[in-house]
Length: 286
Image (cartoon, rainbow, N blue to C red; front, top):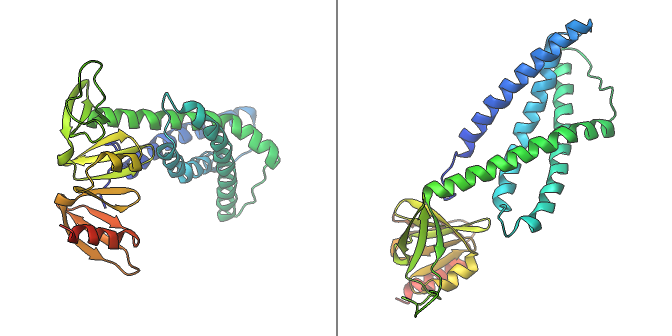
């Protein structure tokens, strides 16, 4: 199945980059903590600060994919941030709770593996309150960077929008069913023909239009886009997908009544069990 998100670091590379950054930070923090402990005359083993820091890093890396998913599912925009912001505030609390629980669990496991018992002088509530003050800053940083990366990816690849009614004079073409979309890329605007769209996939508040190997995010719902496109040319095999009839090459039935649509560019698009009979009926009607 194609990855039709805006071009950006894919999750694997994204995770490796953050692993390297967080690991370097954890190593530095552990060395500083060890030097401070020796300066104060505290009797701690050299491995303890490493476990403290890397258990925090490990817990963060485990829950990072949840944050990325949330940012894609509820993107922040100038016209939606007031509605979405309370979700992010609540998500920061859940994020911190998962981080604290995961961090303490990893510490217990690491100490037990070395034949020691881990004791946390702070209670769970006190520990959470302390960690949340730090976690909310980390959470906000990750959210900002994620949205900046998404914005930069859309800017590099190009972001589409529907043609609007002109301020003066008649429309060049019917706006309700436009023959073109206006794409803005790196400060330039150009037209993408509706007939060149191979398929479209819903992604959060966007629908990604696939055109000649490129994805153009369009801020619209799939239901509205379906109304704007020619029903004779575009088919709805799945609630999250639209495909061009001209780009469909074959239908592969699956167990359970679903199917996979093979597109001209090699992409595989899912077809739901409910939509498969309707799809076959539409294809046989021509």
